[in-house]
Image (cartoon, rainbow, N blue to C red; front, top):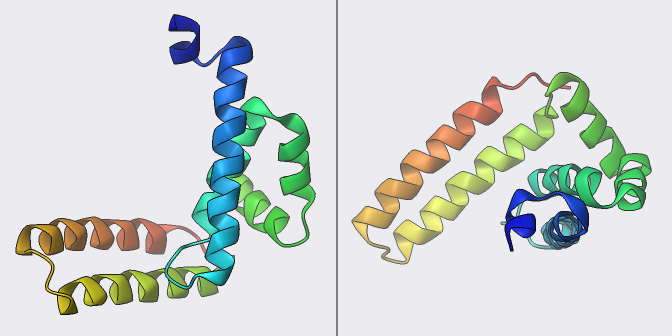
Length: 128
C-alpha cells in the first residue's frame, strides 16, 4: 500500500497511466461538449503519461492537434489567445447557468471566487 502512495515502481506507473487515459478521455469529451475544457485535461494527460506511459506520452506529444499545445505549455507556459478567450467565456456561461438555475449563494460565491482566480491565472500566462 505504501508503494502505491509513493507513486514509484509498477503500482505508481499504473496509477499515472490510468490518470493519463482518464484525463485524455475527459479532454476528448471536451471537444464535443462546450462546457468541458479540452486543453487543461490534455495537459494533465501529458503530464501523467510522462510518468506512467512513455508510449502514450509520445503519441500525445506528436499528435497534430494536441502536440503544439503541450509543447507551448512545456516550453513557454503559453496558452493560445483563442483558448484563453473561450475558457473565460465558458467560465462565465457556467457560472450564469448555475445562477439562473437557483444555485445556493454559498456555491455561487465559492465558484465565483474560484473561476475569477482561474481566469486571472489563465490571462496572466503568455499567449502563443
